[in-house]
Amino acid sequence: MAKSGHPRLGFIGLGEMGAPVVANLLQAGYTVTGFDLDAERLQGCVEGGMEAGVSGRQVVDVSDIVLTSLPSSDAFVAVAEGERVAFDDHRHTPSFWNELMNGLG
Image 1 (cartoon, one colour):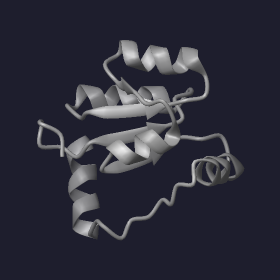
Image 2: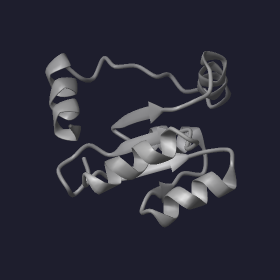
Image 3: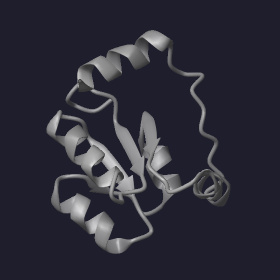
């Protein structure tokens, strides 16, 4: 949990959709660590206040929740398999997700 009381968020994929989502999360007071293969996209989000991850694996390791914005299911699988990351949701209850989403709205 970050100092703000919000969960630490990770974000993988900082393109046309991911970067604006990260900007909104930062504006809402979340701590976000992100990663993108494109160094310019990563740097743009860092300039907006995001912490840079060095890999998808590192983003997962430092985050309570990881969000992705990738161009396809194949890209998601490549990230998960390439980083040997298992994305799961067994740690959080539905009420947790409802509270998180209501806080973002």
